Amino acid sequence: MDVGSLFESHQRLAAWVQGVGSLVGLGIAIWIPQKLAKQSEERIQVEARRKAMALALVIRPLFMTMKWPLERILDHWPSNGEFPLLIEHTSEWGSHTKEIFDEFEISASLVALYPKLHELDWLGDIAIPACARAERVKVLLSTLEAIWHSGGGDGSTEYESQLQEAISECLALINRTISAIDEGRP
Image (cartoon, rainbow, N blue to C red; front, side, top):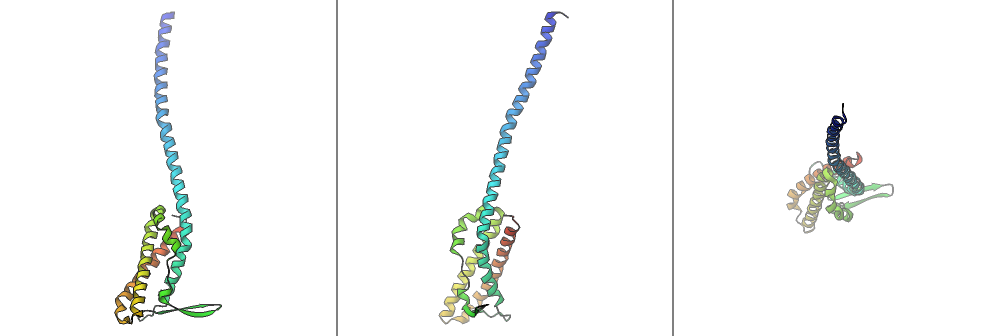
């Protein structure tokens, strides 16, 4: 083998090595940004989940404060379907009665969080309708209070059945929301 042919074979080998190296470099140049983008997306998802969990932990006690009075109202609803005007509260300090109209309030703290509930992803799909149902319950209670205090209690039957249905729907959504939060799934 002479020097010329050795030099020529090294040039061909060098060209192949350079070509393979270029392809490897191109592959790495494509792969690295994709890897970084995927990591960035994962960080964003983790941060969104962390925020959603923090928000869920904030709304849980607010949903509980809505749940308890609604359960008391349904528990005091007579089996004959008549509207319960008074709710009895008993505790170790005694008992007292309260008008049903004063039993249920929607926390101002929860109202302030309404715009953020969409951050709860699929949990927001339960929490937002629960809040809407709670608003409906409050409107129906106010309507019934106005009817009863104006002496028109006889015309309230339609609203009473709507109220009972709205409370049941609201409780179901509240319970689903609370269960999902307790399972750590916002």
